[in-house]
Image 1 (cartoon, rainbow, N blue to C red):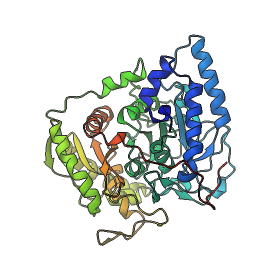
Image 2 (image 1 turned 30 degrees about the vertical axis):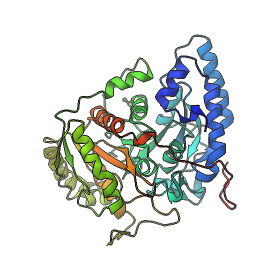
Image 3 (image 1 turned 135 degrees about the vertical axis):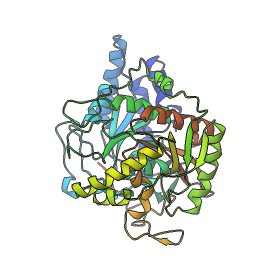
Length: 450
């Protein structure tokens, strides 16, 4: 792995803006990294390398002419295979769309490109994004870079694995029941579910949908905040988009000013399980995080909101009237809870990354999981509240498997929440640990990608 691939987005942006390295060099290093390790991981399932090289050349020429660079100038990124990309295959992980090439860019793709990001292609996802294990009939399974026999999570599993393997430095993703947070937890990166409406989604799938959101994935909290600044802000085509404009950043490094916080006096509720079955290995890794938050000055109390009804809301939200009734009561209880606490700290995932060949988790600590959804309740119950939530690296099991901590903030308090996550990340250092991947060809029989 070259030094350029090891750098996070802010560090790369600093070099690019100072013209100490060219966009061509950064993109070339990332392409080489993909070619070296993705045969093992299977994260970048459609590649647009020729376009990326041409875009990098144009970016360098624009800098040479004295044009001001965008916040993401020259940074290698990839887009989830649910987000439409003009001229690049978007399969949604389904055989029905295996050869589908849209003629337009989704809004998140367009905003990243307008900020100067350079796309290397599309990241793997389960069919139509339905699930927290990234496998589909078109491209097969994405494997966890920290243990290739394990799942990378989902549905933004390709994005999380590509980030962890240092193929790219930023990625977009989407989250209905944990699809940004679960793979981030599994792959030791950061994935944030923003407040609904913070990142507008276009084209619209459901004009009234406040469950499904788009958001940033990155290797650090600061990088995720940078991408959120690019993705957020209103769009006239999206009725439920928040009116709040994106933060005005003079440079990528200015995002650090948004994150700097004195955490003394911040009241944090600590829940090791949200009342759900959680694997002992997850509990063990997360246990020290409570003291980290306390050492940072937070007032930590053992408590959890009453999430009764959240399970039914998530599972039946399409039944609009029933879901609306339950959400009204749920919203009241959540509001009362967060009047006393600014942040809830709890597990992202109830299990550690599981065997990549397993269909889904059937048992947690002796408790049978009755359906495919049960084992991911720690994420989707939070989705039902509408609160912003983020997964940050929190440690590893004795076997070397990553575990993420979920931090949940008050409604629309995305930036203060990022500040808490940034401080936790800096205090622990877990995000700095990269997987040791061999540069070798994939085993025989692994799926080829276009």
